[in-house]
Structure formats: structure tokens, C-alpha cells
Image 1 (cartoon, rainbow, N blue to C red):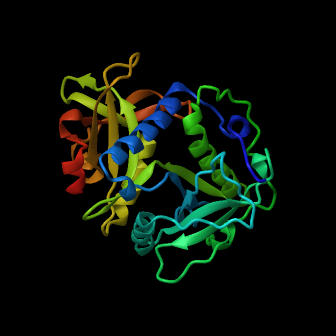
Image 2 (tube, rainbow, N blue to C red):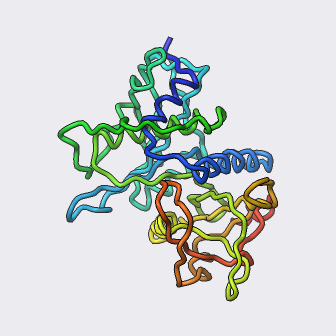
Amino acid sequence: MGTLCIEDMRGFLSRSISSFNLNKLHGMLAEIEFRRYIEALGFSDHVSVGGWLFRSTGEGNFGHHTVAVFPHTVRTVEDYNPQNEIPEPSYGLHTICATFHKLGIRSLYCFPRNVEHNDPESIEWYGIQLGIPTQPQYQPFHKYIEGFKERKRRYNFLRYKTDVQNIHDEAIEDEFSKESLRVDFQTRFFSEASDIDGILWGQNKTYPIEIKEKTPAEDNRLGPYFGLDVGPFVKLAFYAAKRGNLDALFVVREINNESERRLVQWLFITFEHLAQYASWVFRSGGKAMGGGASATVRIPRHEFTSLNTKTIRQL
């Protein structure tokens, strides 16, 4: 048997995540709630799993190569021994990755193999390239990577002792799968990484998604607004710069207050609209998800649109 339990995964996360605060916890839970909401609306086949966007680093090479990786979610009830059949990625993910491929972003779907019982570090990630017209073949994922400088010495990404007990069991499998693949990638290659909350396949465009849980703040000139940290803003701008039929969405799970955190409504804004109406003056925010201080882009709440069946069909 090649299986892992929730506590195996939690132990791995405690060593791979450098810091964990309430903002990161609420972000994870918002992603879970978003997928439930989208599924209830009947659009589960139009949204990808989460993953990572990696860019090459080094003088003269920074950002010249980009790859998107989407891990199969490691489930505690599945056996990942090599003789078992690898499932086919969804049609929607194939279609989404075809858009990325046209824009010069190589996209991989990665599957765990050779898992030893109760050993989360034993995973070997195998991948196939999606969005291309030829029949893909699974092989160790790193064989698909081009343009990234390889590490000559192994870097220890599992050196932390972070308290992750607040991560709900329902979020552990998704987060572990993403972190396991990130550690494997960055152990092999120098890179800059940014997480992908998901990608929506719309009627007209493909939309990478940034999901946050927020209450609106007040400003005399903007009125009620939502803030977005500069890091995610730059990532959404990167997608928009690729043009073609690629845009991006900033999705907000609006809550009543920070103590009760009851859902008010789901809202979204496209990056094209966000860039038009965001304030040009940054404002200092609270702690970012990584734990440090943040600079925030402010977007008037009035410019957001309700996320529902009708508006999704118009994307």
C-alpha cells in the first residue's frame, strides 16, 4: 500500500510552510467555499484545480520562462503504487492549458507515484504536458522543464516548525498536494513561485483566479473598497499582459465582519476592469499571507459584480 494519512500530510506542511497566520487560513477556506459555490451553480467542470506558476530566475533570464503545474490532489483513501492506472485530466483542464500553451506558458498535470506508506517525502511526481495536439506521455515531471537553472546542491525546504493545527482536515489534502509539488520543483530548480487559486474556463476568455475573503473598508474618495496586495496584483497583471483570450479575475467572498465571518455575497472583477478603477495610491495593509507587512491596491466595491449563474455565463 502506498497511502498517507491526514497527520502525515499535516506534519509535512508544518515543515514546508514558513509561517501560518489567520489570513492564510481564511484564504484556504475561501478557496474551498468558492469551489463548493461554483459546483452548486453547475460550473464545476469549468474551474481547474489549484496549482503553481513558476518563473525562471537569474540575470538575463528572470521571467523569460514560465510553467504552470497542477497537481492531482493526494487523497488519503487512494493507493499511489506504480501499477495503478493514472486518471485522465478533465477536459476543462485540457482546454485551459491549451490557452496557456498558445501564450507561451507550458502547463503540466502532475500525478504522485511510488508513495511509501506514511512517508510524505517519498512521493515522486510524474507529469504530462497539456494543451498540445499530441498524445501526452507520463514521465518524471522535471523532464518537461526547460529554461530553468538547476540546483547543484539540494536546498532544505523542510526546515520549519510551523503550527498548522488550525488548517481544517478538509483543506489538508489540497494544500499538501500543492506544497509537495512546490518543494519538489524548487528543490530541483531555481525559480520564483506564485500559487494559482484556480482557472475559470469562460465562454469568451480563460481567467486565472485570485480568491480572497474580505469585508469592505471605507475611504472618503473611493467609498467602500476592497484591497488587494501588490504581489497578487502584479501576478494578475502578468496574465493580462499575455493578452490573447486570457484575462484574470479577482474574486471576493464578502463577509459580514471579521469575528462572525458570515457570507454576504460572492463578488468578482476582471483585471481589465480592476486596472481601470483601482486607486493609483497604494495604502499600507495588515499582515500579508506570508506574515510580513503588505502594500495594498484599493478597488471601489461598486465596480465589483455579483458572481452568479448569469454573470458566469457572460464571461
